[in-house]
Amino acid sequence: MKRQFLALALLLSFSLAVPAKYLGKAEYSLEVSSGGSGLLRLPENTSFQQVGGSFDHDSHGAYKQVQAGSSFVIPVSVDYSSVIIREDPALPLSTLLEYASSTKTIALTPEVNATAELVAGNASTEAETVSRIMSWVMSNVQTEPVPGSPDSHQVLETMKGQCREKTILFIALLRARGIPARYVSGLLYSNDQAFLHAWAEVYFPGSGWIPFDLSQEEAVQLDAGHVKLWHALDPADVPIVPAQEYTLSLVSHEEKQDCYHAILPESMHAERGRIILINVSVVNKCPGVMAVFRAISTSGIKPEASRIVKLLPDHFLSFNLKAAVSTLASNQEQVTVLPGDSTTRLNITGVKSSEGIRVEKVGTHSLENRVLISVEILNSYDKPRNASISFKTPERTISRSVEILPGQTESVQQEFEKSTSPYTVIIMVLNQDNFMHTTQITIPAKTEPEVEYSFMSVYVLIAAGILLALALVLLSPYIIKGKKPFGGDLF
Image 1: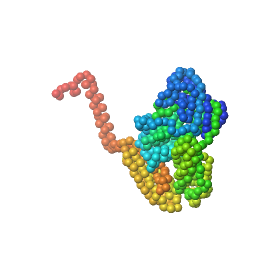
Image 2: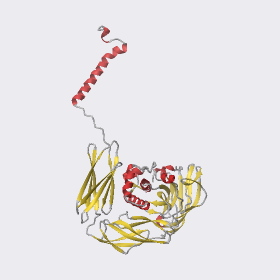
Image 3: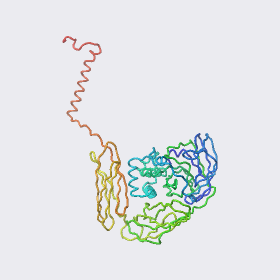
Image 4: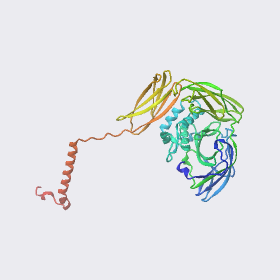
């Protein structure tokens, strides 16, 4: 975890070993202690979390003013399953704009803005935009520990991180599209252990703040392993009391049971390297909720297959879930749509194990004041395909299109001028089925030309320097004693 998290030592509890994803309802005993004085952040009452005791509140949640050596125990109940997603009144415009703004850690740089535009594409609703950005971050950010506390721009450059990094990049991309989102810090309880954890809350008009935990691949109705401590516009906004400790013990729990789930067709036809539409039917036995559905398989369904929908009470809904069929293990594949345990069998046709249009290589060649970017694209379909390539810079977008014959590779090249400071080019490749690949290249700043000297000019400069030094040596006695050179007889 990050340095500011390391200041919070979370101790292990010794109770029932239950994975977080199985926790539907949970009762905890939270022991809190502090080695320093200040505002100690505490869980607060929400529609999914009930806390014993009365505490002060500010814009970040509940807190208690403590002195060094303070300790106390709080009962906490968590239940996301019974949440009615309509808890908040409409936020004022000033608040909405604030939570869609750039901050120190969640910085809306030109590269972040350009990436958000490319990933969101032609999404027509807020839910569709959130779904695309959520899927893109889960698919592209590798789960690895990173040093320091990078901001959103640095996470976009490395595409690596854990819960904190995935959360701040997710929030930054949402804010870049004008969608209010805030940072949440809390505890994640799983298998007798409690960890400091980060996730996001996204504001949906008429529905309130909706939680999204990308590192746990959960949204809306999180498991009851999540205990929220505070939220903020930026994680750097909330100071941490030195040496504070949280010990979370599970007292009792109920297993998670979804009151809505996906119903899928028994089987369907699919072709390798193509986009498929999976028909999903949902019967909702919950109150009105926002729901996220994702298609997964052992090897073949891209994680881009997700969709956010709004479910009304006692409502039946049918929709299509778009998925990309890539390299599949066999000619038959089982696909599951979560939440739920229904599966559909895909009967795969086509002899090639391919991803259709895919980027084989992205290379750069640096010239004097320019950089040549080359993108090699392979068509492994059995028919000619069209591909479009977009090069997005902070100032402009250059779009190119090319037709690629079956089994052939085409190279698309584009030159970019170096500037006085480095900038990023975001590259997006789409085929006619809207299968997307994104990457980015940094164009370095141009260097000032070096001044070249001939050997003769160097010798002249050295000789002039020697003569000047000799003259100063000869004249220094006269200058020091106030005498005129050569005795003054000449004038």
